[in-house]
Length: 269
Length: 269
Image (cartoon, rainbow over all chains, first blue to last red; front, side):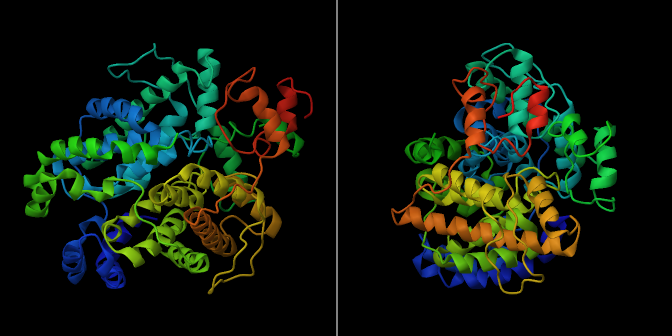
């Protein structure tokens, strides 16, 4: 499913309808004259509703540095999104300069500290969706790379502690941190862990910028394979399999090691 | 950490700096005159950078219906975000009417089909962060309610199949779907599952609107408790505990049932 392409095809019609409904509320807006003008011609007034927004090739190392710096202001999701999209904004101005970047602080710590999706991935995926004409393979590649790579693989300027690399084997915040704590022998609320997540934000935003550049240049290629264990799980649990009770692309073993499978009647895989 | 309050305090300074840097790119914008005027006075030009955006009390049932309808256009994350924020936009117009709602299709299926965070929660959390002066307890309550409640608990008009309710015991997409498949005896790629996720989008957006209303009226109260098993896990693995290798608020047992813990030297909890 390529929603960006759907959006482009359907955007003018959809924006016309949206503009009509929103026009009802214009009398109460902050700038009623400008808003009324805007509603008069919905497709022209609202390039922000049409995706993707324009992209400019980025310097991945510069994006990485910005990710580290922005992490200090609004944590991981904000840091990665602002590093990527803000770097395009620096080159293009509107419509990027009125976007409420600060909303993405919600993704900190796997969304408000819940330990679910890594905020670096959540923010990068949002940025990729906003900027890519075909975001899905880019998001997939970024997530698969994150699962399988010893990270962080980039040291920005200003780093506070020597970087310790670990393989998350998951796109989730909590296992990513737990694996790093095991490798570094540091605690999850230590200043070293906090800095590591800033460096990780740099590394993930940098790789996302690299992938966006590759796609823009027509060179994008999937590089990170799915592990054989997950392939085997998927053959039964994914679409068309005997069980078909799963819709996922994550590595299975991180949350489903063998003892659980054996309890459920599986042979050791 | 309350980033929205930080944002409000720091927004004028930050927007001034942002406006300055972005002003360099104005010559290339779609509407250079308007953008240049805007950059001349950063705090006034960019109310969108200051969070939260203004809120108007919503009818939760109407938001729920809109969530179901928007799911059909852009899946779960888009559906929940658009239902909540779009409903405010209908009342207030600018700055909401130029926001690129379509970017949130990336959250479909736990982010591009990865099965991580449930898109209904990801979209609702983004909306809550955008609209609430104190988003963190509202996000926590929504997530805890989602983990513990038999959902979907609301039937919108146009529902295609009789609703089957299940308790996810997790904020993640993949276990939420697997639990529903077990309860309904339907497959994860069945039309019934697809419709269930649309109805779930309705239910989650509806509850998020209810919680936002409660907070706006000064009546918000935490209602969903943390389960004792997770409390016990947290006493060792969370901040200040003997192990301290975790930062999370999720129910532990969903991914860490007893056989895994026993293998790691735990007594049965």
